[in-house]
Amino acid sequence: DADVTQTPRNRITKTGKRIMLECSQTKGHDRMYWYRQDPGLGLRLIYYSFDVKDINKGEISDGYSVSRQAQAKFSLSLESAIPNQTALYFCATSDSSGQIASPEQYFGPGTRLTVT
Amino acid sequence: AQSVSQHNHHVILSEAASLELGCNYSYGGTVNLFWYVQYPGQHLQLLLKYFSGDPLVKGIKGFEAEFIKSKFSFNLRKPSVQWSDTAEYFCAVSGYSTLTFGKGTMLLVSP
Image 1 (spheres, rainbow over the protein chains, first blue to last red):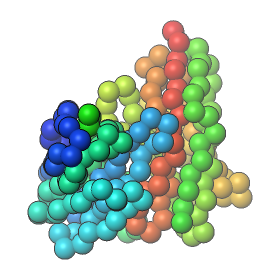
Image 2: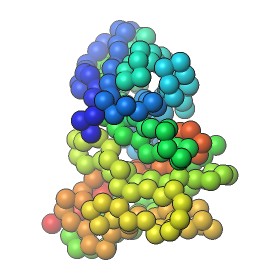
Image 3: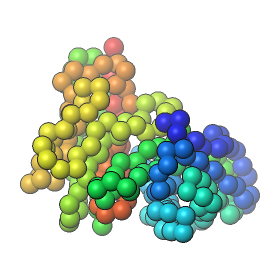
């Protein structure tokens, strides 16, 4: 979905380096999420944010941090990258303004990160 | 905590064959259920969703799913698959605030 963009799309980095993945959305949604996808493991939630002042840990937050700079921007950082953080990372958004408590999520194109 | 189990990791079908992908969930409250599809090299797209009402849900591209509360299941079906349906399919369940995804089923449709 072009309304959710991620940069970079591909990144190769070395063990121990700090790296930031960025997500921007023009959908006007208040909620944003970061997932990682590994073959055979599906998508696992790293962090999520329901508004600018709200940050929550997901299933696998260790080794990651996030920043919600604005309603439209949500960044994921790996402070000291390690090889087992090699994965496909997706950002997603959702809108809480309706009546459904947990509405559908809209995904960005993903960032393929390789840590050597 | 919610969880999702998808029965098959890989499915291979010929074109025009019927498809059924199994999904079972575990959650103690009111659930919202989703099927997402990921075509090769692309991001996840929503196929269909169930929030309430008619347990038979129709989605895009001829897919449908049936919510069976007594079996905690939300199986995905398509009467006749096409080569273009080759993709990975994810079932997801949401409770109050977040989605939990299954591990995915890779579908390969041979022409």
